[in-house]
Image (tube, rainbow, N blue to C red; front, side, top):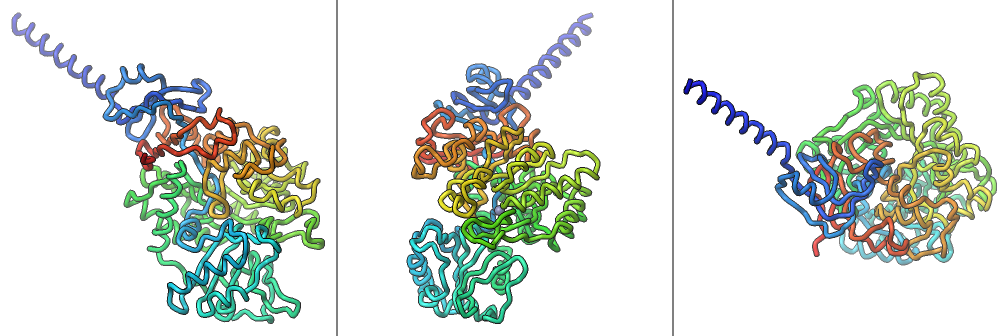
Length: 559
Ligand SMILES: [Zn+2]
């Protein structure tokens, strides 16, 4: 009898220990954030104070005392009223290009060609003859004469170095005579299809090349080594997390960038999540499309499941394909870069292997053609959730706006472009057509969601600047007063969703991120002030206090 009681007692103790251990394990958290103002974007609990994180995921969202009682946390951070939003996502950008820009002459915002030549001259003094000088970001619309520059200025600045300077939109380059000589370009060189060599009255190249013509020069630039690509991507990632970004949709990858990304993910050096789109048509795409997508590689840091094509050029360099002539360039309707059958073939190849299709289209003609192409395919294939995207969707025919929702095509747009372009967009398009440009609210009203990005380095990387542009349609100096075509402004909630929830959806990641709720990645951006309520002109003063990716603090503001 005694023996039986002892056994029963032992059993009870063991049971108690097991239950206790389960309790402890269940209620252990790696990190608790308390006393914040948390915009969850989760309808069941839009605002919260605290959240608990375990093994990279959010495990609970609620109020501070409740979560403090419930969880035994390794670390507790008192947010002291700071604002937490779902980790910001840039839905369209170019990481390597951004890194290269950080690594080369920064020309964005410079207001004269002479000043740029001066920078080139300074750089040439620090490097041996023959070495390349790269720069990026010039924009002749900021200069007093607003004219394309010529090689002469650069020849004086750097006669013995090849110089190649990219325009702000990435659709034109400005080079010197040394570069022309090395590329073998003369007055006899003909314009390639989809490209234009700017010439003087006697037909001599002046040093500026548009769209496809840039390849005549770029093909002689020595390709970067893997180490350089890696260096640039790390530089870019570092800047992105400082700006509060937790994920970037990297548009137009080649095999080298993919190789470097995989290496970085393997070595756990990739500090920001990447959703990649492979450039097509290309050899890389031919190979990659055979293999199928790469999903949640390296602990969920790297996914490559999209393909990127270009239907046309950009508006600034008049390469965007318009239905009617450019208002400021009679006879020019812009350039289409791919024929319909090629775009259709790539799209069919993509959906067969579960790749998402992202097609760059800026002009109303290009958007119309791409929507038609998507519509044709959707009519013949099984009804599946393809989430086709149009990248930029910048100028739309009024009748095309509602087709996005009807076809479930996502307009992936860049709010910051509207304020970067507003000074000349109206000149290119005229007063009527400009109404269909950057038409966010019209798209949202027709039922579409807009994943937002910046297209960095073709525009400023800062997502909060994009948020500000989305809600004000004013530039960083508050111009024009009251905003530019403000009927197309987003509400703050829409703008926040476009950089989080909607961008996550655009990458098929709505179950993993985009809102703050239990079960999702602990990808969070913590802000110094409440961008949802402060006066709009204060938004740009907001500081990023912390960026968390997978529960890890990848950036922290030092005071
Ligand atoms: Zn782009």
